[in-house]
Amino acid sequence: MCLTCVLFPFSLRMEADRVSIWPRMEPFLLGALQVAPPSKLSLHYLRKMASYVRTRDGCFPILGWPMWRHIACGKLQLPEDFAWLYFETFDLLIGHPPEERLEWAECLSQCSSKTELEQQRNKLSVDTLQFLLFLYIQQLNRVSLRTSLIGEEWPSQRTRSPSPSDREAKTSSQNKNWDDQAHLSFVYSHLAEILELLVEPGQLSQSGQALRDCQISLEAVRSLGLLLEGSACHGRAVQPIHRLLTKGPVQKQAGYSTLTHSFLLHKLLSSLQQSLTLNPFGITACLRSGKKLAWAQQVEGAMKRAKIARNTHMAPPGSKMVLMSQVFKQTLAKTSDKLTGANIKIHRCSDAFIYLLSPLRSVSVDKCRDSTVVLGPVETSVHIHSCQNVRVVCVAGRIAVGASSCCTIHALTPTRPLLLPGNTDITLGPFHTFYPSMEDHMASVGLAVVPSAWDQPLLLGTEGLISSSLNASPNPDSVCYRLLPPAEFHTLVVPFQMEGDTCEVPGGLPPQYQAALDDKEKRIQKWQKTVMEARLNKEQKQQFKELVEVKFHEWLLETGHRQELDSLIPPTIASLKNSNGPEMDTPQVTDAKHVRTGRAVGQSPMAC
Image (cartoon, rainbow, N blue to C red; front, side, top):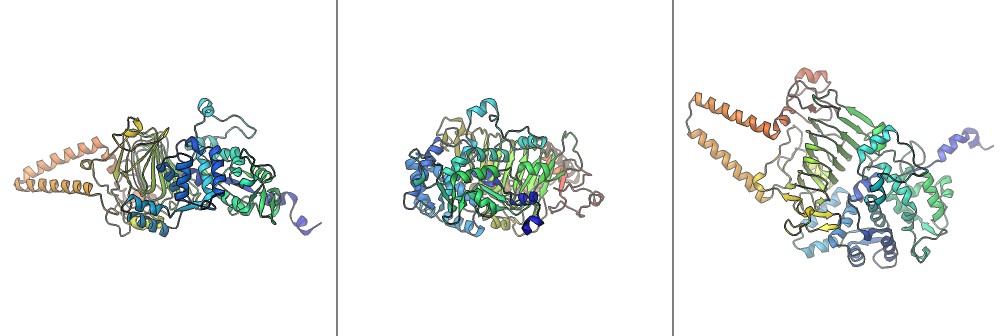
């Protein structure tokens, strides 16, 4: 008997040999557009594209924007704006160092014509096979007639009764971009088709399908790492899929040959299907076993306590998430390394004021109402879905709004905001606030003040692109938004003390909005001068002061700002000591304690 067999029981060796592979979260969360894909991105056309790019110069292994535009517009008959949307989204997903993003932004800002812009875009290229896989996973949000009728997928051998945690995860996910169980189901059901897109054309049948004994190169499997990752066994470090499949016993199971540096397709498919499992860093695991923090005190009138769950203490980069749910009549403010680089989901919050002042990876605001959300710079996307009367203030790589009403978005973004189907009464306004460390945070995620496309939305309807002109189309989705009139514009003040050098809105305000503010300032000065020239006596001044205060408090109550101000009143020193928080005289944003409930006094700050 060998020494290994003596030292390790058989069961332990089997555990050591086991490989777990799961769908990565970010391609589905950030890459799959939250709208049904056009029919020209079906498997039939993607197979044709896969063969085309491998047989044309300048398409493989790197695909540039000019060739993709030719394929998308000339072959697939997609509008050019749609073609650029997919190309730009993929580039946003795969990520670049902040320095590269800032350099790219500088180049775009210097383009003074459409020709110069196109010349700049022509410099952009992507990994061909990964881009094919990215286009394929757009089917995640394809409308299924079967599912729309019966609500669930057909039963299968893999179907099991969901646990309470699974049901909670499903409720919190709703849209498939966050639903890790939907990601697993999608990959498992479509894995054969995904692998077919990676097979070289010479190994395909006349119908474009892969033959049983065909092979997939190691480089092609490396591209599969866009969608899949895994570990050798529980608790081990996360590795790219091509490394897992070329080591140990798994190498033989996956049909890998060290001579040809390729995999047998049927063995690779079988090995992957046997190894697929739920993402251990996904929303299901986060809700089930992540660090959960609830408010220490229940707000009057609230039926449930606000909850926050996070996996940032153990998840690798790209899988960090923070889930916030049911914040009700509270102000929540935080800047922390726990938020930096995390994907944030804000779910079912109402009458809340949420400030997350750290550099973030992505943010989803889902099913919220009557709330204000102020964000630090968001590297990729901010997605607002099924919200009502919500104000979002952000600097982000992309903004997307769907199925929402009466929402206002103040944004600084280099890409055109996406207005998805189902919106009504959306208001777009310029970014209008700052906090002291904001410019440092923007630089850390590669976001610049130019170019800014906040006022140039791209409208996506159920049938594709819609004209973004406010008067050009009778389609209701085309009149779902307006640009904020300068007369209604006001700046937002972040009411917390922080350290940093930023002392004004990054990049300044658009001229028409700055002029509107200047005009309001002149009216204030004129009013102050009128009051001074009235030469009121002491009694009259007191009466006048009381009258103004009454009118001001009436305005606060009518607009809902009273609750916002009350929630910012600092607790007593005794309350701070009892909550083990640092003593402070004014509201501050720290890494420790800075969540205050909506009551006027006596509330201890709560950690998040």
